[in-house]
Amino acid sequence: MYRITRKLFLSQIVLLAGCRSKTVEAQPSSEGPVSMAYLARLYSMRMTTEGKKVVLRNKWNSIEIETDSRRAWVNGTMIWLHHPCRKDGRGWVIQEVDFKKGIDPILRSYAYLAGRMPRLVVLDPGHGGSDTGAIGPSKLYEKNVVLDISRRVQAHLESQKIAVRTTRSGDSFPSLQQRSDYAYKVSADLFISIHADGAGDPSASGVETFITTAAGCDSSNHYGQSGDKTEQRNNQYDAANAVLGFSIQSNLLRNAKRSDRGLRRARFSVIKNAPCPAALVECGFVTNPAEESLLNSADYREAVARGISNGIIGYLTMVKRTRR
Image 1 (tube, one colour):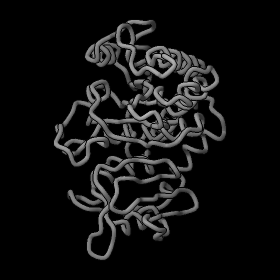
Image 2 (tube, rainbow, N blue to C red):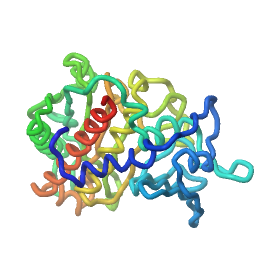
Image 3 (cartoon, rainbow, N blue to C red):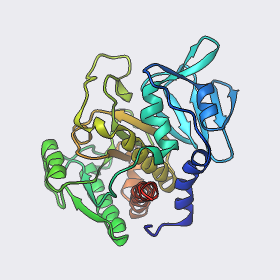
Image 4 (cartoon, rainbow, N blue to C red):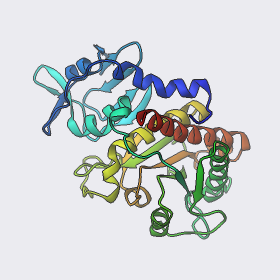
C-alpha cells in the first residue's frame, strides 16, 4: 500500500465496509428506473425522508438524494446525477445509468475496478503559452496557478514511488488533441487535467471535479438544452471514472476547505478522449477575489495539491485492494 495518512485510508475503506461483507441482490438487468427502496435493501441501509431529500444510512455510509433534482450526496460529497430523482408510483426512483455508472461504483468499487494496477499517471496543467486561461481581478493567470499545483501533485505522487508524466512542464500550449494524444503515446493509466474556474459572476466560488458524461445523457451544465449525447472513447471507463472523480473531489474538499460544487459530468475534449480513467479538476474560481487571493498563495496551492494527490492515491489503494 502507498504510504498515506490513516484518515485518508479509512475514508476509502469506509466505502467498502458497509457493502462488501454482506450478500447483495443482483443489479437491475434492464434499462429503467431504480427505486430508492431497492438501494436501501442492496446496501442494508435505513431509508427516511428529510425535507426534500430521500436519505439512506447505515453505520458506514450515507446517500442523500434531492427529490426532483439531479443533486445527490454520498458521505457528504455532492455528485450530480444524469437525470433527476422522480416519483414513480408510491416511491422515488433514479435512472439506472446513475446507479450503474455513479452511486454503485462509488460505494462498491471492488465490483468495478478489476484489472491491472495503474502504473503511470499523466497530469495535464490546463492552458499555457498564449492561452492564459481565466484571469483574476488582480491579473492572476490560471495557466500559472495550475502549473504550480501540477508540479506539487507530481512531487507528492513521486514521493510515493508513483510514476508521473505531464503534458507540459513550462509555459507552452499543447493543443487539446496533443494532450490526449500524449496520454495515448505514453500509455497513461490515469489522466488528471488541472484547472482553475472562471465566471462572469465574481461571487461564483468552490471546487468541482468533472468526469465524462455517459452516452445518451446531457452533461451536468447543459441539462434540458439540446447538445451532444454521443458515446465517447472514454465512456468505456465510466464506472472507474466515478470512483476516481469521487475520490479526488472528496479529498479536495477535505484539504482545500472550499464549498462543494460536486462531482459533475462533461464532454471536455481532454477527458472524453482519454485512453484511461480520467478527471478534470477545478481548484477554485480565479475570478472570485477571495479565491483569487487563495489561489495566489503557496499554502492554498499546497492544500489543493494534497487533495488531488490524496484522491489519486486513494483510487490506487482501492484498485490494489480489489486485486487481492
